[in-house]
Length: 315
Image 1 (cartoon, one colour):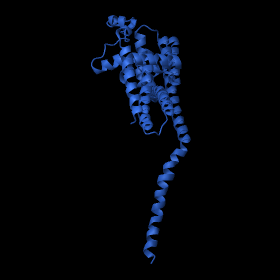
Image 2: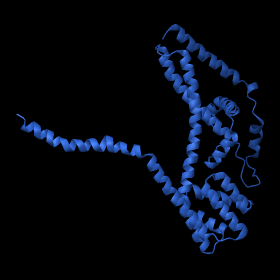
Image 3: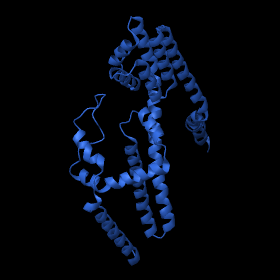
Image 4: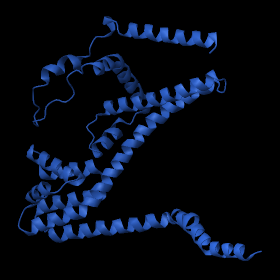
């Protein structure tokens, strides 16, 4: 390592230490109003019976040190990212569809954390390459910036993947749940009573959504409003049709058994069609094992005895 590079690293470390000391001074550590008021409201309950969840007890030990040092910076970077990227309402909707306990601010902090980790890994590899003289500093800076953007986008794609997997799970559970509801309604139970019976024995993403629906009804929301909220929260067309059918049945007293069986059949048929379409799209990929694995082995087994026989008979 040359003297100039060592001096640059020492200067950067000293500058970072001075910056941390300046940021951590008492006059710059005034807590916000939420942190000063919410601890006194932690034992109270809201109108719906839920307790305020914005404040949490402070962490202890090494975690407390990390949160105290880097927490404000991460929050500031998350706020800046939110202002630059936007889309807070869309993220809130996707978090609700994924049933994630995170808020939009917490999700932004995780995005910044993923970006910083990717940037740190890229910087570590890039510094080693720069010390060997195989990488220009400008290319290193561009790589660090690209790694930060990739980390942010990767966290967003991770949330989208969670939403898609949850929606697929609800679609796979819907036929069985609809049949159970049809059986409960045929036995004489009302729509809400049938939902209560099904949620006691069912498990999965769709059953969790129905438990949330029953919780909203128990909290004082009307059945139709709770069904509309469930339809908006899930974003699955089959569940939207199901909630509209239940709303009509509650309002007008229409029969449900045949409609629920028909909806379950439609979802099963849609799943079969999607499976066939996926197989048709991946037909070429399905041929790769046959062409590159099965066929060469078959050719070897077919021609190897003949080759051995020719070697044995050839003088």
